[in-house]
Image (cartoon, rainbow, N blue to C red):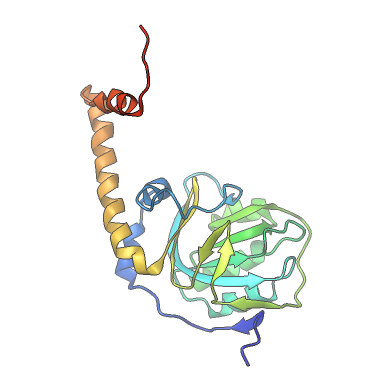
Length: 227
């Protein structure tokens, strides 16, 4: 029996560490640009830490009933070092899904971070410890531990589908998801775009950034310019 809605898949294939580490330092906007400016989570899901956060890892997915974190606790026991636990709590803001103690446990286990489509609590404690957590906001109201829920099935988080093993990258701009099968191409294109943007910035300070493209696009679109 599949028991849809209350089931756990303990493990899944992950990309090689060397591939996952390729996303280190690449900003989420650049990754989004090479994916058609899509796959970025809703802007409500933001880092609860101080600025400068950048985290990447394999998605370990959880679907939980709003206001309940029983399956999140189980996910913490199953997740492997480098995983990011991504939680679909239906966007409900009633009860916090996790707090500081769960972050300390995840940190000791080597889990890279949490992404929660819902609230968390102990915001100051989490920020002070510097553990990467992205959420819709905060709530002092604690969760229940009753279930149901699912672990390592395809979920929705921040209006983006997330499957186990997809690559999740989070920084000050937000969170973006790279489908597992598209990672090699996205990583190659993102690295190339990052280099190109570095060249553009250099050209700005050198005083030779070619701006001709602006008028070319305006003309192509039929814009009329008056003197």
